[in-house]
Image 1 (cartoon, helix red, strand yellow):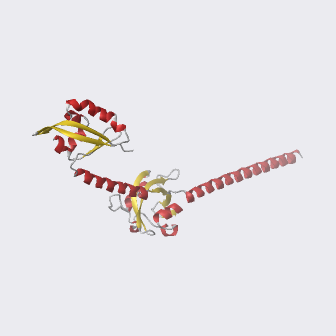
Image 2: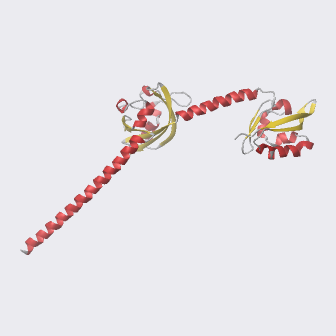
Image 3: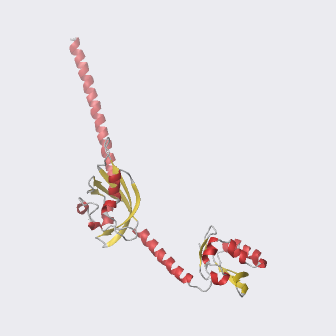
Length: 272
């Protein structure tokens, strides 16, 4: 009878353990489901594009942002590899970007993370290139030394590239005008470095623009007439902090034969 009662107690204990295990298992499943749901929401709503490729480089998954940036649906991307010529990938200088050099392929080959690679890809939906900043991360299973897949995240920087190109062209136009102006023109940065000096300074001082940039501000100050040096120094210390255009007349001693001392007017205006 005692053995039977002991057996019942053991069975009750085992059943209780099973119930507890089942409860813990259910909690773990719920936690996993919640985690997967959070990941799915993030994957589908994030602004960065995400693409997964298997060990052979074939695309197996991509999020909506990647579809939008690349101009392709997931169905159109699945199975496509990096060396597929339809990507029409290019470097910043416009040269071809070979598929085997794509960040994802480098990550698969080296088992190392690849960061901050800029690439231009042709978007067939807009029929225009999009510029993307790419990071690629290889994924390895425990105990294995080769990646089973790689995921790539990328940010669309097309608008930033356009702004940079607009600024570059604007600076190029400015430099073309400034390089051929008769009067001297210069730009001084917030740290008092001479950023730009027009070539016409050589006509005025006898020293090239490069010499003035390399020896700023000592060279030009050494050419200022001794009687004007104090006022010249005050101009740079005080007047350049003003938001208004300032005007200053001074003399310089040149290295040009026949022009030992010349009178000049200096106009300056800080930019904010």
